[in-house]
Length: 358
Image 1 (cartoon, rainbow, N blue to C red):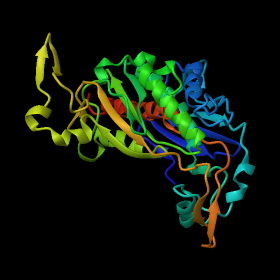
Image 2 (cartoon, rainbow, N blue to C red):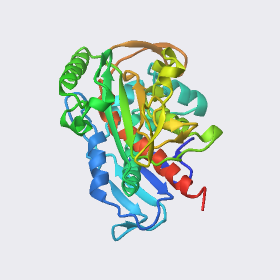
Image 3 (tube, helix red, strand yellow):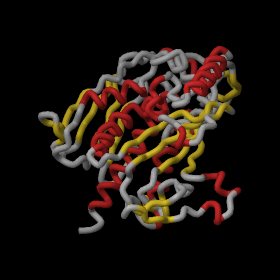
């Protein structure tokens, strides 16, 4: 199973949704980095379940335990082990689907591939696995802070409701001021109302998370197959429920002409930059120093509180009934996950860039 991610700054996650614990091993973190455990915990609080009326009501504090790789508050250069105990697992919530395949879940594909599956919340395929990624991403963020690199993600769409303000008019410091994590208060309120109505309808809805990476140095990324945007795409598409990824002008760029889309290069005050940024901060797969920005699309959560047709392990027709604690929309809690995966990619490529030249 593909449980590892990264080349130099590498993580391996483990654990199941309703097992004893989740965890992550972080390899390649340079020695001597101050590891602020409270900052890691703060990121975990942003992702944890049960934080508002529009998220799952599973109660997990996601209190981390650093097992190795940190001594007297600093990384030692050895693997950093982090454990995240599961405190509120309720496996009985899934006993009714122990031999049934839930529509649009990984139940059928896991069973066909391995001949066995953990039906308790999907086991390894559960989005709860992302808690381990957020813990690792929080360490990557602390490394990036040494280089003034900042990452901001926010909810820019729920269903058909879009944040219409352009990126340069948003105050991203307001993202955490509401439960939907949208930096525009008016749009945020409308999104919250929409999700709450969907929840009352016993249904789910999808959305989009936009991410901006600021102060990225020129030169991150590798030629041909390991382009920076390709790795960011892989990182985002590895997140549960993600169905789409675009960076820069994305699909909107197809409606423009080259004369409109090309980013003119200027030298002002000994600073080389582009007058526009349709490239999304990446050209030829390598960062150009401008803000990197991309959008990640999340499908509606597959578990709905309505009866659905399916089959069981014997191939017989069955009815799957929704039960348990689930998000009506995943995007509010996906924001720190997107940031974490972006941080892991940039940290990895930052270390790779340092190894490429004297």
